[in-house]
Figure 1 (spheres, rainbow, N blue to C red):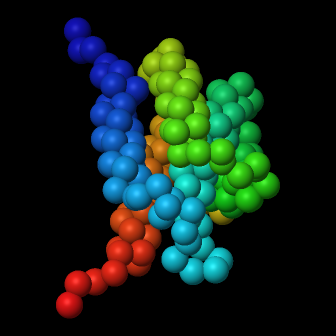
Figure 2 (tube, rainbow, N blue to C red):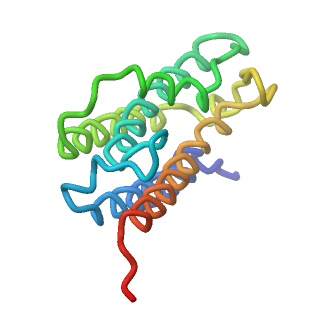
Length: 164
């Protein structure tokens, strides 16, 4: 008898690895650099951390909607998360944001770990990408962290003077 691999156990290592990379990039910033943006319309490292915190809550809510409704149309997280981040209160400190990020990621892991394999195939609709499945939205989470880890590396490079 073949056993189905637990979808959460497949994605969890990717999510952990991507989050570790993101946090290690944040750790490279001096305290004074955390609030510096490389350009006027770009986010600082602290604002990116706040965005990750906000986005995790949005993703969790969307995942819950997907499993509670029949083929729901969700809002575009790539538009909604930045909008919610801009509307949120400014972060008090990196430590506060990191604590919030850890708590939200724990909530996500707890939720995902309780979903049966068939739930990961549940359909939903995205306004730009069309018909998708639950697991596809979950797989965006590590990609989102990786994208912002790279953004943090780019910001750090832009803030660090080159030695001649």
